[in-house]
Image (cartoon, rainbow, N blue to C red; front, side, top):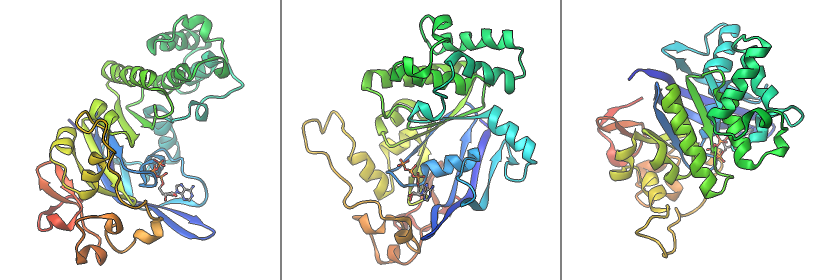
Length: 327
Ligand SMILES: Nc1ncnc2c1ncn2[C@@H]1O[C@H](COP(=O)(O)OP(=O)(O)OP(=O)(O)O)[C@@H](O)[C@H]1O
């Protein structure tokens, strides 16, 4: 399969009043066409900032890509002409969020909002756009789509709003859908329905998905590849089976131990000790140093590089030094 998106040594910084916040520190991974890559890690790992860097949605002027590159089908997005980049981001890349109202305009009927994508981005006439919008609502399994198209977002349930947001995101037939915690706010049954819907649309349309989540159950259900992030760095990456069967990084192992499973049902869940420190306290050494149960002296002095331990499985940890570099 060919690479759709490549993050190459991406560094993204926020220049705040209290100093620079290095949110993403040299992230390298790729997303293959038509596949699902899950990006996992606790809050503050840099998952969303990586996605916002790709989408050009960093807060201006203080959020900046300082180093590295992001490629789309082998071409540098950051070196594209402004108009080409704008078109790429509005037509070929789409993003959905935990809160659908981030994408939906509360003052406009949902049918009209989807029509706008067909008119503005796809260049369809008003009549065709209207027809397509209803078809898209049917595709995301909104019942009585023609009537529902005339509803305002607040007239829909949370699950329906999520479906409308997905409809709007997929209206331009993007090559990549970034889903940032898309189902976290939904109850379990609706969450399952929305994930299944995303999977079936992916199969139909061949869209790649970058799935940002901290829910390893969702990862097991959806992902082909997994990128584990912590402190703005990639700690481990591989295909999904390997992450669950043979995790290497103490952080990945901790995340897996902390998840509810059939085996540990009824037991007190494991917690990775401590909390995620602020980015300023994770510089100059392994970001996981302060919480790691396998830490060695070197981990507090140097930053480990991402190395290929087994074919396709890379890990940034001094326990596995001596392998070839992945980045
Ligand atoms: N607008 C901002 N200004 C300053 N710092 C920011 C901003 N947005 C994010 N950060 C910082 O960047 C780091 C990475 O944040 P990011 O939102 O990418 O984490 P995340 O892994 O997506 O977490 P979550 O699951 O909570 O969304 C955090 O330390 C965060 O405080």
